[in-house]
Image 1 (cartoon, one colour):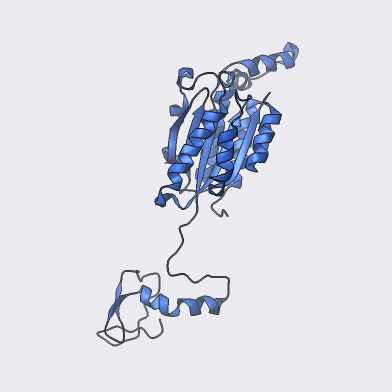
Image 2 (cartoon, one colour; image 1 turned 30 degrees about the vertical axis):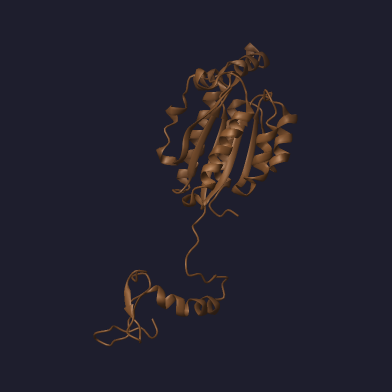
Length: 281
């Protein structure tokens, strides 16, 4: 480091930057003790200009963006029922049902069980991509909404906690309570300075239409909290109300994904998990 010498032996310092800590002290030519950041403040801007590779001179690094996935999962009666199983059996003639034991098990799963498998795969992919800073919030809704996990590290999420009884949220489909819980979550983040690095990706899934259209909640999300949302995914499963979800999608400027059957949930969630990274705008 040019112009830097050891105080006692008067030799130029050959210590490389990786060894120097910000809190290590130096003595300036005027005899004042400073931290090594003193050197960077003196020559850092010149170095950035010299290399000319787009490096921006700063005296304090901005926090690295952290992915925060907020999952809103429909836990209504239809998601936990056997309607998809009945439809599959009606569409597939008995003469063609030469399925293996594994295939038979897939048909017997409820849409909710398929959804849990999809969320588990989502988490596996993110961990495999070495996205150790990722956080996840999981909101489950029916007539009411409950938050199972709140800004939790992915490797701390126990999927068994999502096997909740129908009585917890009820059998109905209430979008308003789901988005109200989302607003509550975003408001907590907004008022917590330690969460400034979070970049929210919302993934909303339903298989039905709402009891009441969530007008006021969407208005708040699209105005007061719009800047906090990096991506907004809306996923419709099976026989959902396409017009309603398209309306929500337009309001939130999101991306609508059509999922024909529960078995396709894993692929849909895997695509999102694979496409998101920390290089977020």
